[in-house]
Every structure is written in structure tokens, then in C-alpha cells.
Image (cartoon, rainbow, N blue to C red):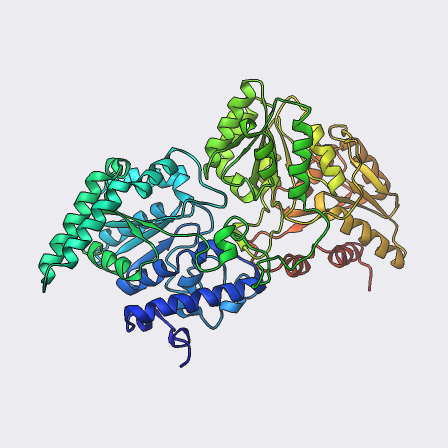
Length: 626
């Protein structure tokens, strides 16, 4: 007998199955996800945890007429497999393949594009209200969890929904984790619900009573189920959801398909705002992921048999250099504290948290709070280091301006995943941070060319009596030897790496080395190029740049950021202000569009962010025939 999965091309197909077949299908889907992600990499643990939930939602609800909105969206792999993308699942997160997140243009079953946390209830409420205004009839379900309930936006949406006369279903997928373990009072609150012995005893007794009623009719069974829900509702500490205007049901076993389907069949006909609490296990069905869900949250390619990564890289990543260096400096300076937003492991702070538990703060998926909290720590005499991915720091832009920079507080932003990040695609590329930071007063903005320079920038930043930020990529370092004694840099001072007379290449961050290699290739064409490692985006080394501009009369800037408002714009504006309008300046960076998913090597080649791309851009600017 072949796989059930091979017969599944839409939710209609799964609705023809019985519960035993659904349970077997869940096993087949897990095997398919594990086999594929072991080759491509991806969000494994979270997707393994919601296989039964995905099946139950599409079984009970009439999708795509009924709308399901996945929060964050990285747990949507089973959803994608059963909604017509089974045959293309092997291309997930690959260039020209299917996205690792819900995407409306990809499928009618993807009701809303996602990628960042805590947005699903807001989106679902908007879709529900649009439905009501248009006089339409369908269910709207928001699936939130994997830490997203620690984000304030989710509660803003629930608070708003509670004051509206509409029908909305929220499924709380409670797996006790985001990327790292969840933190905060809400987590403790949900833990009480999960662990309530009295609740479990009442449920067991009620099920026993119902089970032993002979020939029970449908209506009697519904009454018993209603009594179970109401007793549960009275006994568990679910007041917070009631206060926000939601009728609370649960918790339910998120891996019991039959129970989930019956629950959803009931709630889809209920009026008002409904909260269905389900408990799932992150990494379910794959022992290495069950044991270490954090490692397999966003897994690199791995060996299925052992769970070990197969990349075998020995050069440390910038993230690892950051974590190790911060520990080294924190041992010498007790004022240094680390703050992150549910990214303890992703930002390289796990060891810091273990060594300095009293000086490590995980704010949960609450970037706005994390930044203002850090500003207040600085007011209290501490030296906070806020470690957040570039794309997520966008969510705290107002707090960065108003609470940190306006007060000129010594907060260091360690901006990880700056530039092209690869397979997670447009929601995760960190390609706007230079543009949205460089015009903010008081901040010093840097980007290292290699891991040794990164260490120097960290030490320098922590000596600045004001805001600073260091953007660094999701990459391994270049393999340079790291000096035992960390040096400091002169603020705003660039470095001349190579002297030339025909053109000046001014590079920032991880494009410095490609700029050096491009200069070497240009020499084949008889072109002599100066190469400058800018180091600082703000303040610029105006003296050096102007002196080189006067010498070469031609400048090309290179950056892994959008050209609009980026590093090249800063250089152009500075030269124009200085009255040198006769100097040719070309800004090489990312175009004014959202960058698709794909491996960083493919994307950078397509975007001209490689040695060859830089070389060709310079030859074109010089009108050299190749």
C-alpha cells in the first residue's frame, strides 16, 4: 500500500479520511518534513509540533472559504503540504521555490503574508470585520503561539476585538517556547493551566462519566461536552482571556486529532470571540528536535540519523564572536548587561546568560519594551547591549529614537542578521537598517569587515557615552586571526587598505573584502583602485573621503543595504555639501524592491554583491570595454 500523503492534493482530500488514516497521515507528513528540511534547512521543530493541529483545522473548517491566519508563519510546513504544495515542498526556502512562510500570491489557502511575530490576531480581526461589512459568511481563525503571545501587539488586538461585535476564533498553540524558552508572567500563567492537577482530574472524571453512558444521544453528548468546557473554564486561571472579551476553551491535547476536530466543529458555530488553548510539543516525532527544540527551531542542513549539522564550518560566525567577546568584556566591567527579545540562542547570548544570570534579560518577543527597558537601565548607570536582528529592530524604531537617542543614552545595539540572510526571504533580510538609523541624531553606527575588527568595534562602542549600533551579517567570519588584546578604534576614522589613482572603492561591512578582491581584478585592465574600509557609517571620515575624491575624481560605494538612504547616499550628500559636484559617484547596493528568498550566494550574485559584480559595475562606470 502506498502513502496516504501521495493522494493528498487539497484539504478536500483529507476530509475524506477517517481518524486512523489521519493519524497515519500525520506520521507521513512528519517524515516528509524531516527528510526535506534535513537537506534545505528550515524551521523544523515548530512545524513538527503542529502537524495534527494543521490537519484538524483543514478537516473541520471549509478552507479556503474559511480563513486561517498563521502567526509568524514558520510553523506552516504541514499546512503547505496539504494545500496543494506537496510536490513542490522540496523547493521550500530555495531560490525560485516556495516560501517558508505563508504567502498570498503562492496559494489561496494563505490568507495573509506573515514572517514577523504577534500579527495574526490583528490580521484575523481585520479580515473578520471586512467580512461583516461585506455581509459575507465564513470563519476566521488566527493560530498564534510559538512565543508570539509574549508580543504586545497580540494583546492590543485582543483588547480591540473584545470591544467589537464580531465572530473570531483564536487558537493558542502553546508549546512553551518561541525560539528560546518563553519568559514572563504570561508563560507562568499558561503553565498553571497546563499543570493544574485539579483540572486534569475533573477532565478525567467527566470523560469517564460520558464514556459509560449507554447509547448516549448526540444532544446529551453535546451537553456533557459543554459541561466539561464550563467546569474547565471555571477552574483554570483563564481570567486574562475573559477580561479581554474571549470565551476560553481548553487546554486540549494538540496531538489528538479527533479531539481537535470535534472541538473546532463546535466552536465554528459559536458566536463571539473564542480562545481555544491547545498544548503541543515542539519537535514532536523527531527525537533530536524534541530534545533540543532550540537548535532545531531554525535548523541548518543535518543528518537525519544523528541530528548533527552537515555544514562542518570551523570559522566562527559573527554571532559567536559577539557572544564570546561580550562575555570577555563583561568580566571586566560589571555595568555591562545584555538584553534580547526571545533570541537568547539566536543572538549568541546563551553562554552570557549562564555566566551572568543577573545581568541577562530576555524581554520576550517584545522589541519595543526591550529597547525602552534598556534605555532605563542606562539611566540607572548600566551599559546595556541590546541584541536584536536587524529586521526585528524595525519594530522598535520609535523607542530607539525617542527613548534612547533623544536622551543620548549609552545603549549599544548589536544588530545581527544585517544584510542578505537568505532562505527566510523578504521578511527577514536586514537590508534597511543603515537607512533607518543613519539619520537619527546622536547615534554612532558601525559595521565590521572581519571578526577581529568586530571585537574592536564592540569595545569601542561600550566606551561611547551615548547611543551606538553595530550591524553585522549572518555569516561566518573571514577567518582572520583574532588578537588577544582587543583594540579600540578612533570614532569616525576609516582605513585605507589599498592606494590607487583611477577610482576609489569605499566599502562598508562584509563587502570590504569583495571590494579588495575587485581592486585586484581591476589591475588586470590597467585600473588602479584605492580601497577604503569605511568602518563608520556615522560619523563618516569626511576628511579621508574628500581627500581621496579630489585625487581620483571617481568613487564607488558598496554596501549590503538598500541604496535609498543608505551608506552611498551618506557619502554623496557629504561630498555635495562640500561643494565637489564634479566628482563621479556610483552607489552600489540593493535595489528598491523586496529581495526574494534563496541561498545568500545566489542572491548576492544576482544582486551584484560579489567580487565579480563589483568589478563589472566599476568597469561599466569607467566605460571600459571588456
